[in-house]
Amino acid sequence: MTSTKSNCAELSGANIIRSQAALWRRALLGLLLSSMSCLAQTQAAPREPLNMQLHGFANQGYIKTDENQFFGNSEEGSWEFTDIGVGASSKLTNSLQVSAQVLYRRAGKTSPDGIKVDYALADWSLINNADFGLGVRAGRIKNPFGFHNETRDIASSRPSILLPESIYVDALRELFHTVDGLGFYAYKSWGNTLLTFDTAFGDPTISRSTQDVILTVTAPGTLTNEQLNASRLMLEDHAGRWRIAYSHAEAEADYQPAEIDFGVDGVAAIELDVVSLEYNWSNWQLSGEHQRRDVTYKGIFLDGFDYTISSDAYYIQTSYRINQRWQWLLRYDRLYMDKTDKAGENFSVASDAYAKDWTTGLRFQPNSQWLISAELHQIKGTAWLPRIENPVASEQSNDWLLFTAQVSWRF
Amino acid sequence: MNRWFTIAMLITLVLTPQERPQAQAVHHIISNSNLGLTHLPLNKARSIFSMRLHKWPDGSPIRVYVLPDDNATHRQFVQSVLHMFPHQLRRNWDRYIYTGTGQAPIEVDSEEEMIKKVSTTPGAIGYTQKELVSNDIHKIQLR
Image (tube, rainbow over all chains, first blue to last red; front, top):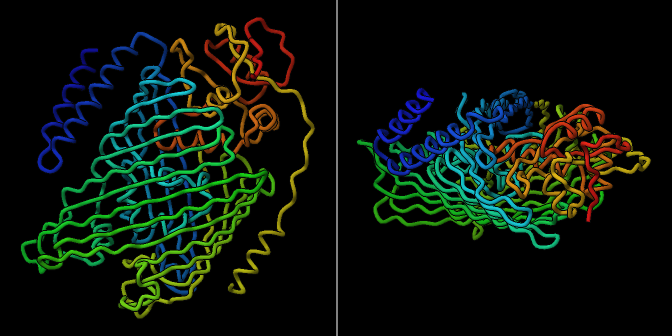
């Protein structure tokens, strides 16, 4: 136990010494995490072996478009669409679980290639009764948001290969996916209905490519002091026939100009509100989500600049389970970047103002480990087309097709 | 709609066979006799098999045993006893597993193994359609 204790002390120490931005939050988090795990190790030591579980998955996709680039050189056919995740969880006590997962992800230029810690957290369940429960989480936490945000990388839990891009826009995946911070959750059951509440707040991750998407330009300065909170209230039937949810998320960061920069100090903020509905009947599922997104820029480009753009998005989708192995999907997904300018009259490229995506797909699941799926998107507009992969506006096409197929394996 | 899109949609609709109806058997929930459990409300059973509830009222851990997703007994149990679809249970488990906020149930390969594990593991719960011959297992009535 001596070595465990000294490791714990080092762990807390290392976290406290971290310098600069969001110092206190990280330090508190580190202390909490390490003290929780130390406490748990001390308690768990003499008892039964830890309930360790390992899990993992690998998805390889192929994308072909007739026009426009999506996840690599898709006009020629792209294989740059890979996710590989490996994780472990352990119940240190009956109430305390620690878990972590690393993820390798490749999605053309839309996300930096490489391995990163997808989540690493301690989950402390304070109350866990049949009718009521609550708990806290600390670490790198997935943000509760809409039906799909937390499980967006898991092929088998998605209805389609690409989630509705209007709401789960891949270019902003990194920003909204996780926070390094704290979370809280609770549930309450009444009769046949279950109410759950989840919230998380802390520091999101903003790499250079995400910063470009937020600012819509490649700026020499840096977004710092970033913070994000996300919450979701969900009401569902115990039998899983229906669920309805409201989610709200807010992200904010300060713009710090570079030494040579036309820009000035400022703040960029994104606020999201999503309403989600799902109904299951026999082998049919009907679902839809509606999102309002406000992006606000203060300063940054010009002293005294203050501008908010409100976008409006929804999708409606139906899927049919033909049998336990085959499933068919049809979806309409629509986004207006500026709901006051649906045709894009004030956009430099009009088609950047909207995207209307009809999708149909088929999934084949021979067993719980393998999944093979394919889908075709017919798209009008380029609102969610990654700029970084389509830098020349005149080469973009307003009317395009996207075909994608994916093989997924997990254990 | 675009011609290719319509063709793709039609192909996907026509391609695959329909599910055959399956014979009904009597399934019941079983638990380790150390729990002294004879009855469970349906929604509590759903919470347990969904992995949301992970502690018995005395604070001891619930150990949930299941057969593989595509096992016929599993599918029939989930549909006829829990009145849920197997993919709904799987979705709940996936959310816990892949967000690090919970754990998966313990998968066994056969009903024989299920009965063996449930009878020898304190706090264990599972299901079977076999008639029981062990004193270490209680059959649970749903309310």
